[in-house]
Image (cartoon, rainbow, N blue to C red; front, side):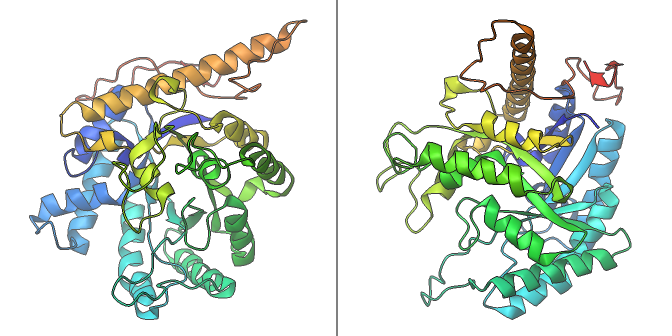
Length: 397
């Protein structure tokens, strides 16, 4: 399969203001053939269906009804649902009753919903629960064996399900105990189950070793470049591509001022990288909005491993909370422009590679996307669900 674009539904607007129906429609209008479904969007629709209070969790029946409605819309628009995410705050919990409650009560609903959606993977981010505000005690353990065993049990439940569910583990740059792709890969290897693999995110990879929103230039002082280069070198030499289940892409905005107390994005007690992520992610190729992370180099390293699956935009931003009804359209259009610019960069580098006097673009870093499927430029007839795209030689145009 050629690399093709996908978009996580959270990247199109907050579920507090924008329905999942509108967001899927806008993804389709802008040529996206695949989405990653955010659990908040699924639960928001479930609450609408059941008229449940916004403060209470939706029932199993309403969640599954919402999944059917989303599946029907996506089928009509020829959109594939890749995964459901994120299954938050699970591994390494001090409170083992909460851990068991997720396994016994939450996970079965997720897996049944996933089956209805026609997807096969649940994304699990590394736990970032802080200390208990009431007691000051940790809510998670650092013990490697406990984390591995928790995730191994998750895999076992997925393997027992009628649809044989997979799980993709992602290191968040602000994770309490797991915050680098290397640590998450170590855990995936230790779990050692065929249905348990890795999720890589260009923002989180850069955010862990290259970026620091509390510094003046937004980078880790002195070591940003060398640490990232070493990390990507380890990726090239150690990562097994067959265990890579999900790849997500996003850039980050360089702040005009360090993220210290008094900054608009500062939240007391919250990791600075989390505050930055929630407010300042960008689509790739948006330097005009302050994008500065070396995400093309990271993406190239992933593609050089042999990845040919979907590349999913996952962009959190303060702009998602804009209640303007055009917000989903604006974000879908930005994602589409980003993909087209990635295509242009890839084409430019291929042309340069054929030139006797090749001049490698510093911005692109020799960036190429072998076999990259191009985003469709045609507009879908959303109401009719008609796909009028053309395909030539395996490359969507």
